[in-house]
Length: 606
Image 1 (cartoon, rainbow, N blue to C red):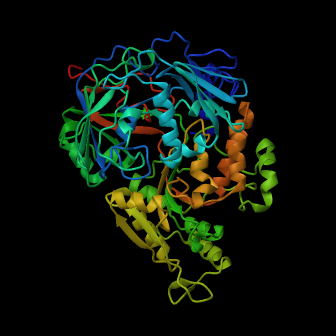
Image 2: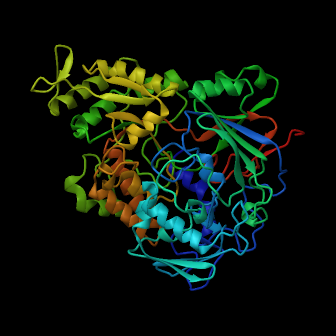
């Protein structure tokens, strides 16, 4: 989908929420919601979220399959591997996000939010009656303790925003205020999105340690039973305090949500075919067409649904660790991108049906415009021109192969780039002037069959350059440990990006991640230009400035040649038991966070 077509599709949603960054609560008066983009789409007396079916029946179960395992029930720290469902469904935040808008929060644990025009502070008031699953009230003390623990001992993803909080103070029996250290219009929203935990449960315990103790939360589900590394079952809390909130009507309809863990994705698919799990996301378009002829499909027990979306492509592919000397030169990264035979790989694995990821924010108005930078984008980049990688300002696009397996023209271009960078083929191997062989390791997670197939084709192309990489398959625990510590040369990298990029971009691409473990800056980039664009995004007060800053960041990332991207899909392909249903209205983000199982329900009769 072109950017112009996407923007036309998105324009009604943007029009409904007004101009960008004018602020949802601009006066000293509490509001029911807050939007990064103008005013919230839903009024104070809204009945339910547009993507929810308020009449959805309650009951039944949904069963998912996951590859890998888990060894902790604490998903808020760097250590260990915890089921994502713990953070999604057993605890709550002050505000809840509507995924039918680019970035709007509505009251959840908090009944109201207040901020000033500059968004130099934000204040929340808790709902009277908010309760943890053991019946104890959610208090301001719980909120303040949770925020401090997360900001200091929690996962690094919480640290960036917490470092910008100058003061956190209780301002009333059920209210608290955060005052910020610097201009950053997103902080008022981020402070509404932190999980609130029970302080009493953690007294005398090390918050930063892994644990299999079930966390106490205020969410719609509680952990019913589990076996570490094998399965976990969540049970809908019949006494959930928030069941009747407008924000929650039509959500969280299953009595049970079960996650079973398997060795790899291929085994999960076989379990789905056997009826052991009830829903499967298919990432391969060719397989979607050819591999769904098993009995459950032909009998109608399993149905296939395609869910469209309007979110950015994000980035998926092989990431270079530029902390390694051999990948520090952009010409080397470009050469290795040249021989990544996308057209051949796409045809072999997908039948050539999927579009390639053109940039990190492609498929959206936030994506860079092809050709030379112009207008405000060029102005933002100009102060950094001397240090930017070639193509950032002039324009950069990914290499295009001829579709053949040998891909000779791209191979010749790659060899020329490598020679410029000081590497040449000697005795069948790529070496530098000192005779050192160009070598590196590709680290992959076991069971990622499609990824392994991609890398197998890629290594054959690398052999034509005199490069024989070592491919190492590790289990999910080792993969997490190695990537958290940046202990790899090249690895498989997936980053979903939203229509409202903000502070998380510093975690993704900020220079602190070069040395601090656990960031998402796997490539090890340290770019003052990128950080300046992120700051411009955070301080923007109008749509044009925000879009220009994001497009400029997209140029820096894409022309940096940090990731060899593959394809993305404009739909999600979900095969599921016919007893599972979803509303007709598909939210802006499609099948993403907050969709399945959140708005789905079970109805065997239909």
